[in-house]
Image (cartoon, rainbow, N blue to C red; front, side, top):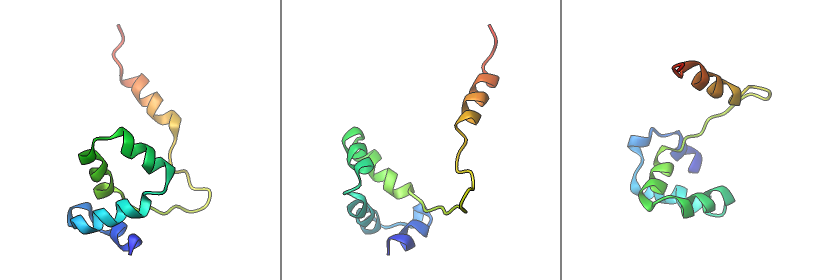
Length: 78
């Protein structure tokens, strides 16, 4: 059921589905901490927009250095 919900476009998720996601992830430390740090509205938005993505073993998921390079290269010189 959770996989099915995460596969839906965010605009098609019902309130019940969002609530089910929140309950399903409630015991995960990251989400416990995030719930304490965010206002309730933003915490709900997190689950409304959460999506499932799969990657192949060894496939790059993110590159930390690219963002820093982008920010550095786009800043005007003084």
